[in-house]
Length: 214
Image 1: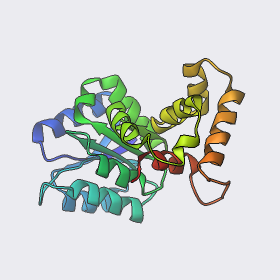
Image 2 (image 1 turned 30 degrees about the horizontal axis):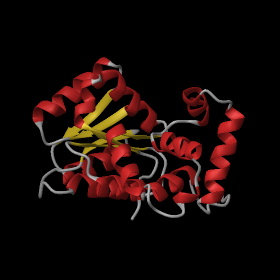
Image 3 (image 1 turned 120 degrees about the vertical axis):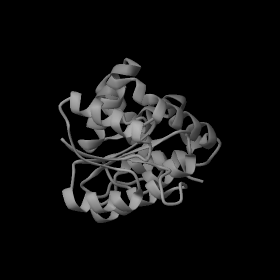
């Protein structure tokens, strides 16, 4: 897997590079600001970009803005965003790009190398990975909203796990139910959230967005 890292902390950038290289991944470029990120991504067209939310030049949301631009211009590239804190608006905006292959992790999660590498590979392969703390805050904020009140307790559990990037098979295993039961719950969620079948939209992502958007 070919990876670009955008992180303004030299120590963290070096640490991420070492972790990924030791795991057999190919870090093709590392940069410290958003403008350079855009340049190297267009130059190398990697499988994945790992991006800090707050980067130079303004140290606000430059990394996120660059990530969203990459999504628009090169949608095949996976985007794994790293943040020091849970920033709900940024997580929602990233998911709002409505593309596969996105992730949002807190930097503390990198200490668990296995979990970090799992997120890297899942996002690079087109999956979605949200930090458990991000999911918890987004869901806590959104549980009072319609049409979510239509969902049963079990459907909420299923949607919670969908938001964490779990497949139907993984959800079935965690809830100790059959794959068919999960498929039925997912179908009910789509129906209750007014998400009819379509060839254009990713209904799993749209369902999660109804959890988290204002």
